[in-house]
Length: 219
Length: 219
Image (cartoon, rainbow over all chains, first blue to last red; front, top):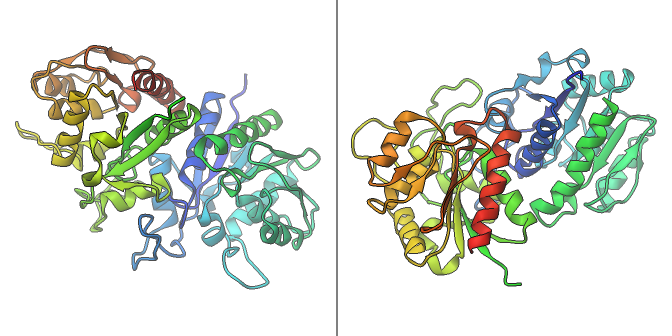
C-alpha cells in the first residue's frame, strides 16, 4: 500500500503560546499507528510572546516557533516555507493559542485578522489539488482565514464568537461536541473541537482519532 | 469505584533537555482514558541546560523545570517538594533526557550519579507503602538510584551501559523490546523501554499503554 504523507502544522510548543501539546502529540500518535509518513512543519518566525505556563503570565523571553515546535517533533521538522503541496497527501493543524497568535492574528481584537502567508499558500494549494485538510480546536478558524469565500463547513465546537469569526470569512460553521467531527466531503475538510470543548485529554482524543482517520481515508 | 490518584513526574518539556513529550502525553492519555485522577508534578529547579531541538545545540537560555513541565500539564501541576506519598495511589515517570539531567545526574560521566532528593524521598515512601511505580525509557535508571540495594527488577531495553548503571545500584536489569513491559510484582514496579528502543511514537505507545494498565491494576 502507498504510504500517505501527512503534514502536521505546529505553532510552537504549549497551549498558551504555541501548539497544544496533547492535541499535537495525539495527532502524531494516531497518524503513526495508521502507518502514515508524518511531515511536521512550522514557520521559522518569532512567537508572538512567551507565556509562563505555571503562572499564566507573559514573560520577557523570546522564542522561535520552529525551534519550540521541534520539541514536539523530536527535531524531525521542516520550515513551513520549504513545504509545498506536492510534498503532502494531506495536512492536519492541531490547536493551541499559537494557531491564533503565531499562525494568524485571530487572538487579537480587530476586524481583519491575517494568516501566515506560507500557511495560506499551502492550504490553498492543497485545497485546489483536492487534498484533505484536518483542523483541530481553534485551527478551523485559521483554515477559514486561508480559504476565504469558499463556503467550506467547519466546527470549533460551540463558542459563539469564534463561530462568528468563521462565518465572517465567507465560510460556514456547525456546532459540535468534543466527541464529534464535522465533515465537509465536497471540500475534503474535517474539523473537531478538541480542547475548545473537551474537559480532559481522553475527551480530546476521541475527536482527534476520528479526524485522523477521516483525513487518511481521503488521502 | 474509587478514583485512583496517579502522579506523573515531568522533567521539563522536550526530549533533549526535559521530559519526552510523546511519552509524557501518552501516559496522561492512557491514565485519563482509564478514569484516573492525574497529579502532574515537577521539581521547582533550573534545568541543567536548554537544547535547541531544531539544531540539537545548547543555547545560552535558562529555563525552570516546573515552568516548562507546565506546558505538558496545561498548567495543572504541583511542585514536587509539596507532594507526599499520601497524595498518591501510584506514580509514573516518563523518560527524556530531563530524567537524566534534571531529576538526576545520570547523563554525566562519573561514578556516583545522584538523584533529586524530593524525588528520592517520594519514591522510597511510595515503595515502603506498597504503592506502584511505573518507569518509562531512561527513568528506570532514576528509580534504581532512589531504591538502592533493594534488588528491584527494571528494564531500559537493551542499552548495555545504562543496564550496567542499574546493576551498579544493587538492582537488577532485564533486557526487553519496546513492545514489552518488565514486571516486578513483589515490589510493584513496572518498566518499559519506549524511545530507548522504539522507532516511532506508535511503537513507544505500545509499552506505555501496558505500563499504565499495570500501575492502575496495582493501585
